[in-house]
Length: 522
Image (cartoon, rainbow, N blue to C red):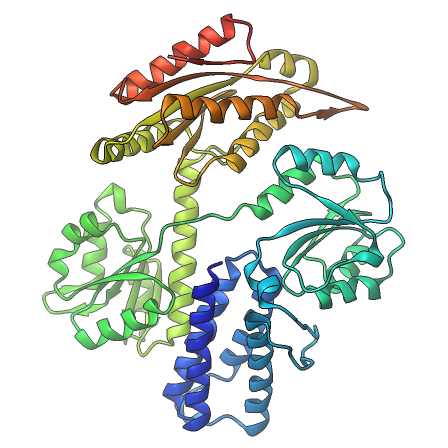
């Protein structure tokens, strides 16, 4: 979460609320509701679960009061309750000392730096010195330092991940931890799988519960996934509507969410614009001169590359039969004009998120979440083109887990899958967002480092090799260790993608023949 962006959106929200209080017109409330919605979306994708929850409560309260123009101004009681909740959220985000909040959670905060700006830490709160040592060690292998403290030492007002041993802890203690750390994630460890027990844990502040029978590797996986946020490119929406006024209203509403838009008045330009702009979603007016939205949708659906792209109709059409027919002929949703801008944002973002999730599932390996074989090569081509234009080096590494067949034969395929995931997690935690990381096949991985020379890449992979070899993989009452071998090659010494992969692969086999658990360069 960008602290600057959060403060900017908070300022916009507060300005809109001040305008409504000065002149309680419906238009001002629309601006306020958009501001709340935008801030809630920013906090929702950030690391602070507590702040996201508070902002979403405020959003629900505002939407419940949205109503029609004639329902405004809202009652003095409703206005005062909204104002109190707005002050509470503002104080949490800016670090001012808040008054007690009257909502059901009674959140408080003391420092903006600790609540909204510091990166998350990992605390293990347990009065048992040894019970969770194995989990601590496993997380440490993936670069997550865990500080164990007793319940009496629990910190206040930090933005953290709390792993909680609830043995001997009463519910008021848990509720107090939640009140004192509203911006943190609380994870209960080792709970009995009882409905009533989990209900109490969640009710008193936990965000997640790990059952007693959950394995340590599964716990590690879940914790890593909770800390792993997708850093997607900004959303893009193409608007096709012959009304310039509609363009302005839609673009203004979507801009509040940071969504990039392009507007067309002539539907005949839609295919060229789709190819050039590459939008995530299309907003189509139903009725335009010379061509209807349904006809545009049918033309778009003739092109395989656009079959799954969401199409949302915008129209004053209220005939249910015509709406159903429009959806049957290529649309995904129908919004009637005039539209609620908050609802428009919600529809657009949810459709795009599902669309991107579908694309992600097609481009990524299901076991590890890394790029699959085809996507790895595609992304490597793109990176190579960029390095040529920028006259920068690029290093390619091929990694293969040593003696992996013996792992499957001795411990079983589920353990083998866990080993593959472990190496994937280690790599994901250590590489940059700009690097290319894929599961190339079986137990083989591809890693490309744009801007890195062969010697720089060797230093990175050598450290990764040592760290992977140090991991203790639990099995039955003991553990075992593994290693990987690696081969490397670099551009511009080798120019094409195929030649780079082949050279790195040849170096990998030299590493295997040379005794394994080593890095060789082409």
